[in-house]
Image (cartoon, one colour):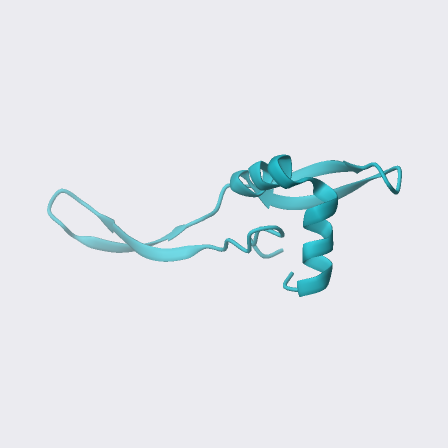
Length: 77
């Protein structure tokens, strides 16, 4: 499964590790993703999303139903 947040769209970025001697080796910066169950009051059921820590903060701020409507309208993920 891809490492993409279903709310924010965050995905892995690529860059370099740098040693003290400034030698570069390739690496990936992976988002902080978690599977989390959210309760939907209108449907009386749980939904499981793969969200980043920032995505959880957005859901706490705006509400899960607002975010689900946004995802359905934009169909980004």
